[in-house]
Image 1: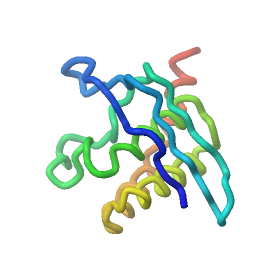
Image 2: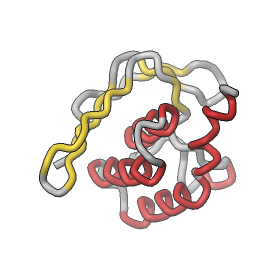
Image 3: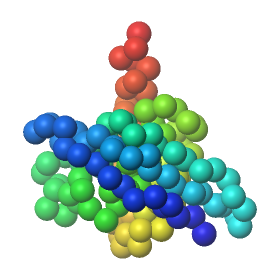
Image 4: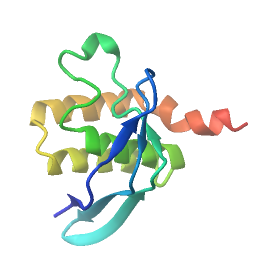
Length: 128
């Protein structure tokens, strides 16, 4: 079974909703019964957890049960570790490990699939 193999240790950067990892953070991904990847997010990586518009925070806050999966997803998107669809599937796998309620997992996954493209390509656009 997939698992988070280290604790998530972060510190707040400032009032901008950005957090910095103090220690490396790992997600061990297994699909179809065999090890596929260990994703290691290094200390110093900056995350905002889940990029959810403020209007929805009462139902889907940025820092919720799915927070660890959101950090892995941010890292996969930022460094384009995999094609976008695979990054989103990894996010969903992380949410399953964290026992996120199915309705929340479904909403978050489908919103990311619908609107995540601009975030996935954001780093490349900023580096031009």
